[in-house]
Image (cartoon, rainbow, N blue to C red):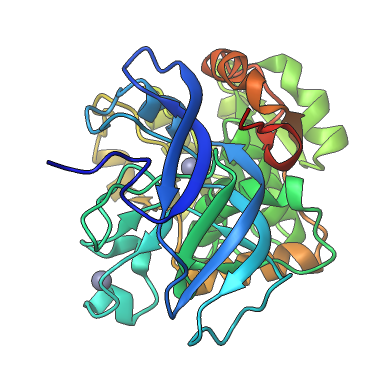
Length: 360
Ligand SMILES: [Zn+2]
Ligand SMILES: [Zn+2]
């Protein structure tokens, strides 16, 4: 018989978990392994709420095993390091994103692309090397092999930095990989939410001209005045969309609901790239003729490798980029999930773990 979550490891841990597909989160006692030779253990200070946490607690992808402690935008301060740890010391500010393990020997891992390793181990709800299930950052402490730990520079505020570990890298990585990081290029960003607002910030810092494409006209002022976008298109306004045809080098499409790709492909110049980072549950319609005419590409991208995640954090530190957040106490999490399902947040909820997670 499997040991209980509370007793399977020696180190006590406390967090909030969902027990069934209602997705309702409540206090949960569990345990974590002792700090191994190459492990970094840290006190969790903040954890972002990613949209995939919402999918997971409600088992909307059919892959959840309960109880699930979500959270993969985790930041904190190192409390213990293993004897063979070289990159970190007690007191360092660190973060862990979506990954806590991979095989480290496949072709992808050798290229620092642990995020495409067939054996990648997710920060929560995944089976770890020892056979136990991983638990995420809605909890008081965290332990990870140092390979998967990110160093957070001192000038970055930790609360706003947490969402960079998923939302940030999810948009940064395709900008780099698809060559959409050259100053002067014109980038479209579809959807102004957790991912979209980060795409605007990174692209502006890289010197791009950025146009936000949204269904909500009321986001225009926000996008242009506060986030610094250069343009704004209302996707339903065919006249506006028509005028912008053939003007963009690339588009980062963050929308996770079924939507039309054809108008977006029309916005691209020849050789333009439409990159999807959202994952709608149903197939999207893709007509090939508009791709042929202009040799356009539709591609995808999933988070980023550890080396690139560190590069993204260092870039963010250099350009003072953090996520726009609403800081919430732990016991607000169910309300936050409810609001997140209605896209009622600017632009990321972050849980103030250290100040509000009470074990009694
Ligand atoms: Zn995420
Ligand atoms: Zn691998």
